[in-house]
Image 1 (cartoon, helix red, strand yellow):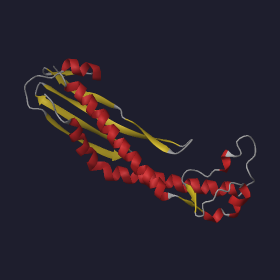
Image 2 (tube, rainbow, N blue to C red):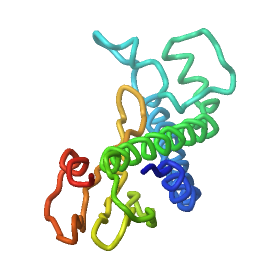
Image 3 (cartoon, rainbow, N blue to C red):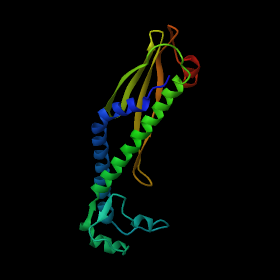
Image 4 (tube, rainbow, N blue to C red):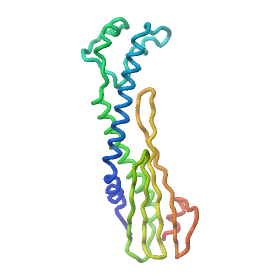
Length: 202
């Protein structure tokens, strides 16, 4: 018995995608503006010195200058301080790319768990799948898989967004999930692992 879990998860994700995408774009935009503020503040001080002075003369990834130049000295950068700006467009592109990647990974990872859990099931009953996702800082939700009254389970899912600020700003994701309300042959089971699911649903 097979079911297109990826299609179902895609539909659920797309329902909350606009909200999630807007939040990520705003986060990247805020970072771009913060980088500009920090860079302009640095330009008010003396030139960097020491072993890593040259590296410190490069502006952050979301800080651009209106008059690109190959010159790379502190005095020139201080004189052109007013020409620096937050490259919001680049931040927006990166945010959207990160969301696209997160969406693909979320669907792939969660559908993989569901396929693994149900691949051996050969019992009777038309499979019914329902669920929902919500977006409030993190994406959380569940998918209920119902074969019949005696065989069903829920996969509780979430997607946690983390941020890395160095060496460059980027977001990365974790996709925790756990099986709940697992009923096999009419009996409710507790704490069923992903590996056990394929053995139970046969």
